[in-house]
Amino acid sequence: MTNEIQSTLRRTLVMSMLVAAASVTTTPVVAQTFPIKPVELVVLFPAGSAADVTARVLAEQMTKKLGQQIVVVNKPGAGGSIGYKYAQQKPADGYTLVFNSTSISTVFYSGLIPFDYRAFDPIARVTVENPVIAIRANAPWKDLKSMVEDVKKRPGAVSVGNSGIGSHTHISSVAFFKEINADVMHVPFGASQVVTSLLGGQIDAVVSVPSALTSHVSAGTLRIVGSLSSEREPAFPTVPTTAEVGMAYNGEMWRGIASPKGTPPAIVTRLEKALQEAVTSPEFKAQGVKMGFVPAFMPASEFGPLIAKDDVMLGRLIERAGLNIK
Image 1 (tube, rainbow, N blue to C red):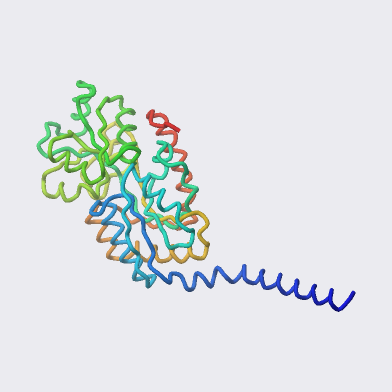
Image 2: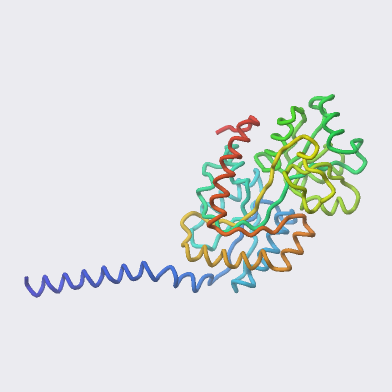
């Protein structure tokens, strides 16, 4: 073997070793320096909405943990699909996060986005919320049973609002009333309009997450008549679940943080740790009491399987409700 060939082989071997070493060390180094600039947190609802307020408290706590600003970017509309499309097209580098929820499945099965939950890497679950049914304080119904009895006597006459086509509250509303064979008129709104429309008398009831209703219940302008869940909603502990009044239905909704598919695992781990500290902080817990959500941290290793399981369940639910157009 000539000296030239030996030299070429040595150079090739050295390059291969350097490439291998780089593949082992690059990700940890990136994770150690991440983040070196502000991180976007995409919120699927408008500024001032319950999801937006919750996200901003979360972002404030994450900023303290990561040492870089977590900037809330509102991309509302179409049940969350606009925000999901925006985030999915961003680089998978950890600098774009999405405040996701079970809506990733509902908007997919409703045909509003061309990709499903697998377009994102799960980072952590942060909260759990139970949809509830609210009516005006002066409504003629005293509870959920009397409301349903009236609905069944007047098919299609009672209007029930939700936060938008394909949203979790839309799917939950349709599925619940279909499950109990009650015919109502479903009215999808933007998240910021639905409660205002109920207060103004344009609709008769809403299916909503608790955080959008707590201030109005405290003010005495709205009443909660039922929680669409298997356990009572902590924000409204005296309100019975649908199961307690013989109308079993579970519409529990989680919220969490995800990033575009392909985000380096070490960066996911870095973000997951910051989220755990943020969710367990006194400030975030206090916001949960105020807004009506339950802080419920779950790591990526458990959050991913939960998303997949719920996706199957929601797909069946949407199909049974006649909303699956895929």
